[in-house]
Amino acid sequence: MHFNERLAVELGIDTGDQALIDILSGNRPWPAYAPVASVYAGHQFGAWVSQLGDGRALTIAEIRKPDGERVELQLKGAGQTPYSRGSDGRAVLRSSIREYLCSEAMHALGIPTTRSLSLVASPEPVQRETMETAAVVCRVAPSFVRFGQFEFFYHRGQHAQLAPLADHVIAQNFPHLVDRPDRYARWLEEVIERTACLIAQWQTVGFCHGVMNTDNFSILGLTLDYGPFGFMDAFRQHHVCNHSDYEGRYGYDSQPLIGQWNSSRLLQTMLPLLSDNQEEAADIVTDIYERYSSTYSREALRRWADKMGLREVREGDASLISRLLTILHQSKSDFTRSFRHLSRVRTDSDAPATGVREEIADLQAFDAWVTDYRARLRAEQNTDDAARAARMNQVNPKYVLRNHLAQTAIESAMNDDDTEVAALIRLLSRPYDEQPGMERYAAAPPDELRHLEISCSS
Image 1: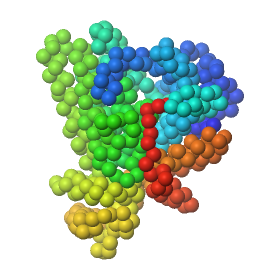
Image 2 (image 1 turned 90 degrees about the vertical axis):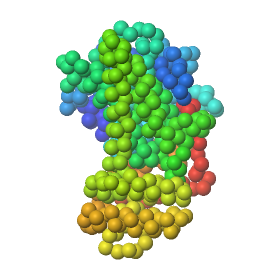
Image 3 (image 1 turned 30 degrees about the horizontal axis):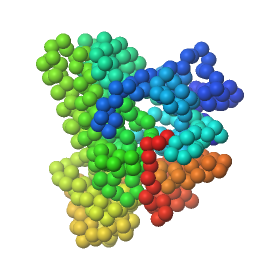
Image 4 (image 1 turned 60 degrees about the vertical axis):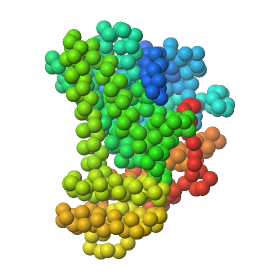
């Protein structure tokens, strides 16, 4: 259905190789490589599940890119693995299109993520809530190791397996730490900081993951396992994108705390690696754990400030940002468009802030906020409105993968028309550019598609 030629070139893969279609559909192995599925465990919606695993994902190759970076290629949906737990090991076209599109959209936004190389569709029937058809995505990452793989060995009492797995991850992805005697502690510091930075990026682009289980958290701080995700349209602090999340555990405003909670689960598994003395190991873990909060706060505040065009973070900025988010929440303003239009605020004029103001319910509160915002810009002599607008438009995307856009592409693909999938890939590869003629992709969803609900079923 789609082949990511740009990524293939980055990987040094011969795009003219006719055997690729058989490999990427799971019908032929990568030459001289035995496919591998991994076992893991995890906390799912806060509850411990002792064995999960790659029930439908197979690592089919490890390759070196032309620049020397090592990456893994993994098929998702190619059939049963040793960890399928009685299921079919398949993925449906609906969820495969969403993962294919969103991983590439996130990459273009500058957010760490797995990538997508290919999307293969099949008429083979797959039973989920209804009868659907199958698909296979080939995804790419330096590593697919997740928090849950360490949890698996720790909770089974197989602590001797932790060091080889950690050493493998460090050697492959943190080579600067290999020879350090304190490599495990330093490595965990980086993992926790990467995780906090990732969540800060999600929050400031309005992205909700939907299933932040520990088995869906990458040890490299990548966005992993795209299921019932969603970019917010109308901004709601408590937005829940997964209709299976009945208690709202993974709502938008909960994501930073869940990231920290998941980090604490990972750190618990590492106690045996850090010291033979339990108290000393606990002290090390506590110090690393506390890095999450400070890293997240610093990174999120910096990114919110960038979205507002501020050159630096000053005292009072957190309050200014919070006030704006409260106004957007109360008005259910469109998150992406509101921040994009914020670049239109001028410091050389007190004219109303067009674009944003049209979606605001409490105009008195918003106009008062704009007055304070202008004063803040002037305070740092940030009065070159054109230059500031250009900076803001490089961090506030015009285009994101809204649910109704993905749904339109899915429905077309189900009718053997893949043009909308290709159009979205092209559009979302340049999310910050104006792209004349494509404005309809930046519009709010029509009323009949405004409340799409996405489930975990895939």
